Image (cartoon, rainbow, N blue to C red; front, side, top):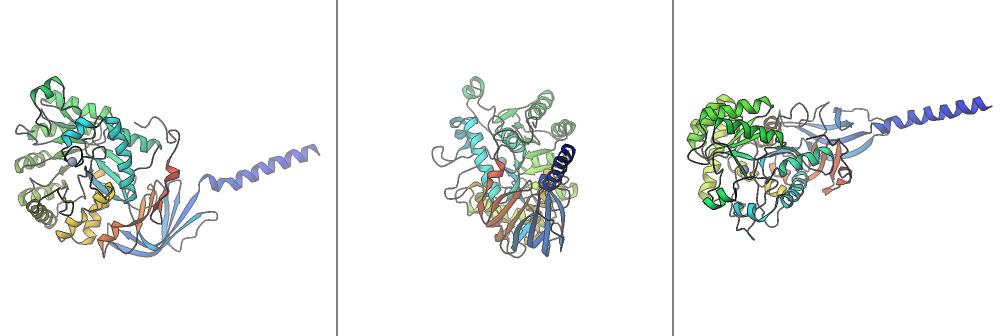
Amino acid sequence: MQIVTRYRALFQILLLVAVSTPLASQVTAIRAGRLIDPETGTVSTNQIILVEDGKFAAIGQGLTIPRGAEVIDLSDLTVLPGLVDAHNHLALTYKQVPENNVYYLTYVMESTPLRAIQAVSNGIQMLTSGFTIVRDMGNNANYADAALRIAIEQGWIPGPTIINSGLIIGGMGGQFWPTPEMALDKGIVYPEYLDADTPDEIIKAVRQNALFGARVIKICVDCKPWGYSTEEIRLFISEAAKIGMKVEGHVQTVEGARRAIDAGIWSIAHDRGLTDEMHKLMAEKGIWRAGTETPISLTGHTTPERYAATVSRLRNAWENKVPLTFSTDADYYVPGKHRGEVAIEFIETWKAAGIPNADILRAMTINGFRVSETMASRGPIKPGLIADLIAVRGNPLEQIDALRDVRFVMKDGMVFKRDGVMTPERFFHGGPVNGWNIR
Ligand SMILES: [Zn+2]
């Protein structure tokens, strides 16, 4: 009798294990009314997307939904990969009050801890607008961008996947023109910029950023008349390559663009130096363009003349088949808008340039994954990749403004937003659930 009881207990345990196993790897099944593949610009209808252990397991029409799976019905919506902003500054928000939109004052008036907390909020605001990847390109106080990335990766808070640059490396002064006493006595350029004026300093600066958690290197190619030569840019590229990182150049002159292109830089930020000739060279070399095309609708952040030039340069880049990314340089507060709404506003410039919707969407997704180098891990909706996706009403291939109202967001296989409302509880943890040693 005793033996039977013992076997029965064992049987019950086995049964419990068998029943609870599917729960250990919970399957989510998403019914997608329409599913966009931005790579081809095509739509398939009535797809089922299976997500297991945070990754896409299978995608297709008429797939069997496993018993016990959580079913999410997006059959009225269009599902597509998450969006990428290839140039943002999440830990910088300058404002009309108190700093009159001068970020030099933000840097003086707001501490790194405060800016890090702002970055958490800005990241959440980007995610709710559908941006699942953000390249965070410097001016982020004392490595607040690295802290943000690590906090998201460890599992403390929700946020986009962050590809961060750490400090912007520049020749003496960075983008500042400080007074001698503030620069020399107070070291005011650091940490907003990291001065590197000689080959030794260049190597050390790249290593410092790598040590403190950067994922890409950002340099000031021509912020100052002394700028960086082609040889110096090559040194940045080779040193960064040792750590598996690419180099983005802030470029504001044609000659700066020429040197960056000659050196074979990975990506160029801003469009001011990008002439037809530079675009042709960029297309030939496959250099990414992060043009940061501020729309005229963000009043006070561009002028009609600058905007007209920006639109025509973007058009010219597209005609020359330059690899285009969607990039905003969003780093300011626009009353009435959150950071994600500021970022999505930039589609206005792309519309004004007459870029076809399929190409705008490609810049916002596939090209964003490529410039972020995440194609092997996340981005496309493909089996084996981490499950990030969004859903909108309508069809962005027909009406790109459909992206302004993101109804659903999944990040890392977890629902972040549903029916247009953020539901982030599964992203908050009282400890580093994904491991403390993510640096
Ligand atoms: Zn910027």
